[in-house]
Image 1: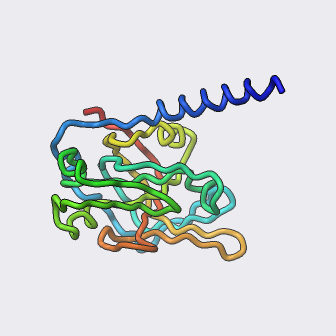
Image 2 (image 1 turned 30 degrees about the vertical axis):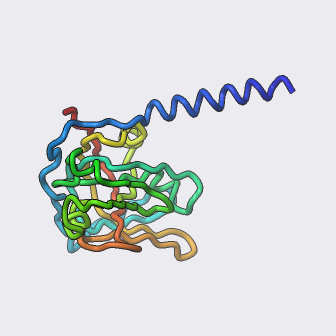
Length: 198
């Protein structure tokens, strides 16, 4: 019975540390990431192998965006490959003054937003955000990804990929920022991830 209080204290301490490490950053108003992601589609991509899965490269992608939300995954089918999703915004969806009107969340590999005031048009919101399943290319990227916090500005380079695994398992990337709903998320093999200090 004496072990239970010790375990409780450890769990509370771990939870507090996790929360502190992922505490939000709140930049001042202003567009932080003015440009949409740069993408170069590949006609003859390469095949990469990761954690028993095959990744087919579909496009090179280079983007700078504000982190609107992050969600860690441990137990779903893609968790080993892509342990973190980042909801990202650019253009006016990187501006604190605009984002103050939104409630943003992630769950089940989807990204959700709600607003009552519509500070910018719906089409602009949809074209200026993405939910990205992050596949770290190496331990360095994995470590950097673990430290990313909501509100930070990040620069990411890598490849949009389609993943396939045993028993016919497949996970396809979106190839455009104009889609919404199921299948609209980007699956990115991340070769570099840097936090840009304001």
